[in-house]
Image (tube, rainbow, N blue to C red):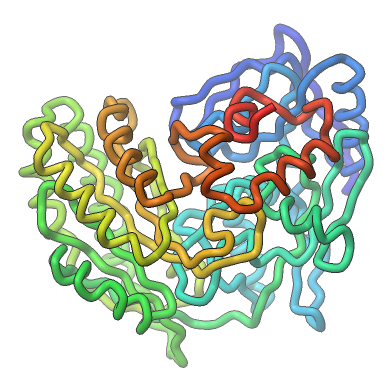
Length: 443
């Protein structure tokens, strides 16, 4: 890719804010490299100037994982597909490519990722480095679909890693937290595009929790949302289909995905933030607004949805067998507390994987995610939920709100020391460090 590096310094560097607006930082310098060589040059110069380096994608993390007071790398010029290998069934993509752009381009080529999260605004490097995932009985996170990585390390070296080349780096760098280097390209496994049939259905809390194991076993992708202050849930089952494609009608799709899930929900959240006592009544109405529906489409149109209502989120990965107990404890906690929670609680699953600091590393997992509307005081709710999750050995999502530190992670990740030793080797001077990484990885 050709181009010139855009750089801003000193007073011209504007503050950076994340998507949710809860994290702000003011870098000394910004750079937008158009090639791996330009990136390496910028990293080397930052090291000479005593500046720490962080890369920021679209800012969809709720933590300060990308915040820096040094050099901020914006990777939007490192975008696009480098190559498609139909024999190996892989695609190599530049690190700053948004998932949305990748999904559309792959579909045009008759290809698809096997699994993905429920939004696709993030860059591929940002999504994989923080552990973005969807739900799946057999198919794991986006990072687990990586077959090769290219990154620039602290010494300005361009390094390639895979299961065969530098496998110890590959095991960690697929979900590297931005701590091991700056990713320049990712090679994903892909497969011929396929159809998914989505079945969305309301279900009571007692039924979905009683049948959780069966619903997980019977479906390739199962998830559900519980609406606090109610006994109502909405379930979603995605399974491969022989077709034909039968996407939602334009009007009905707009009503469900835009009008109800974004427009009306935005108004309901705004009202709830202004007048918290009305939240339980709103929850009872909104939990019944989404009706049962079935549709069939290509994967990214089924897995992902528009998310225009801004919020804060905490998510914990638990051993899958602990999920129902933990969720029941969350429900009981909300019911006995004065908390008013306007956002549904999301439950998803993932198989065990072999990535060093993946939240599903070495264990079959279930995810419980709690959200609050942007601007709503979150500390009491998130603290109460976190105490339940940590009692079950939970691992927080690296890009979502939590208060855990390196001492905790050393207990819940058997390979934690393996990651920190690799970091000591690749970045001994903490060029890619910041306050968040100091807390979660130690110094």
